[in-house]
Length: 261
Ligand SMILES: O=C(O)CCC(=O)C(=O)O
Ligand SMILES: [Fe+2]
Picture 1 (cartoon, rainbow, N blue to C red):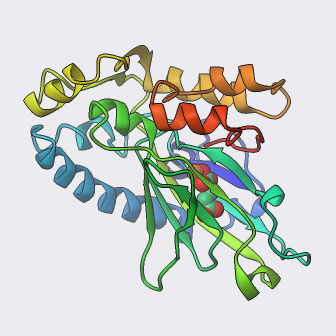
Picture 2: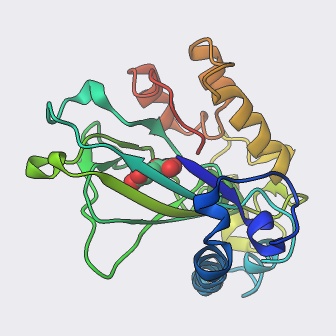
Picture 3: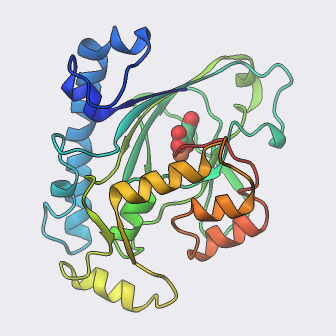
């Protein structure tokens, strides 16, 4: 798995955070930079449409996700070898999690990603379609929207059927709010969001954390070297007050860890 920070891609050949291996540096100008720019452009169209639907000013979300502002956004490339033994639930490649940011834009050819649809205990495959991308709403957008947009639990298991004999590749862009954006529901900017928050008193939509603090806390607790058990899983959590997630975790959905979502 290779993660490349958006800020490093956009600053290239200057460095903002760190070095990357040659497969990434060779492709910065021709592939990574255009990929980031195009993805952010598409995501802004989506964020504007979502803002309007949420009763927010049209740019309320996109102005919190500007391309040239520092953030924890990044590109991720995941290569998974073929699984000769075929499918088995224990072989989850990515444990159950919800993404930390706002929008995750995923491109893959093989199946394997599964989602826990709200109100169910059944994992369902999300089938990649040619010419399409898969979009996950992350926890930050869930919070900003007062829970109106859901960040569902998902995981990755070996691809189904005959696909298991192929190498699986995912390329994704993880869009997260700008570093200093407070992660609170936007109640002052939308009566719809204010109403949704008022109707969910059991949830805290005022995290007191900035987007950067939120991501760093979660990355640090889930990192395999720090991970000691369920307590870290909970400390890494963002939507643990969200009933479906809490129930799934208590039922063991989050028992395995391998993610940096
Ligand atoms: O590989 C995939 O299809 C999804 C990976 C994922 O959920 C993640 O990187 O957060
Ligand atoms: Fe994910």
